[in-house]
Length: 213
Image (cartoon, rainbow, N blue to C red; front, top):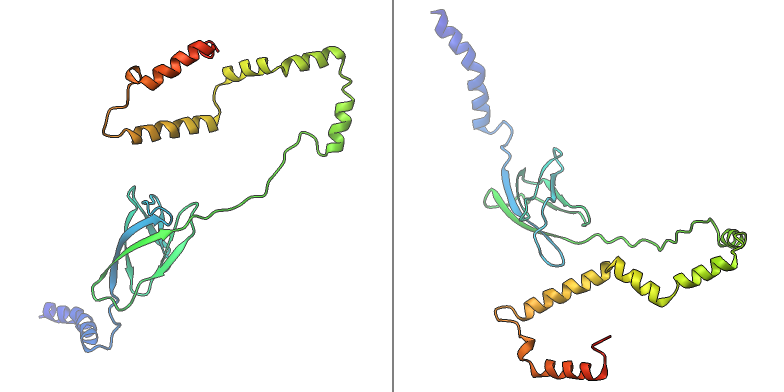
């Protein structure tokens, strides 16, 4: 007879709590909203991977995948911030009057452009100090002649050919190649062997001697 009394004693607080909730005197249930969406760039609407989606209420969050997609649970009224390096941080609040416990979001982020002032780097602290150091070198005529030889246009051209192309030239060449591929996309590129205009230019180059150059 002691066992049923013990069971009733344990179930008493649970039953009392359930009655309070059923009568409406307990706390109201908080609706959980599943937020899903994409983070894109503001200029081209391209997916932005590895952006941070942060929930300010409990300092928790997630990150977007390679396609800019994310999914995070939140409560109605929560503030969600979305940020990424090099972009302006954006925030939105979860509405409290949603008909369904889910929400779809497409959040664009604008680029955070920072303009830095122009900086000049000198090996000496001032121009006057550089002038003093340069005059104290006392260059000999032989050193001056060597410097003139190194500034010869032909020697500079030979060294430039050894160095190769710089970043700007490589970029322009790559852009030209991509433009040519896009221009002849889906068709065969022309063959200059059967092009009469190309043959005419070749004959003119042979006649005026520009081909040897």
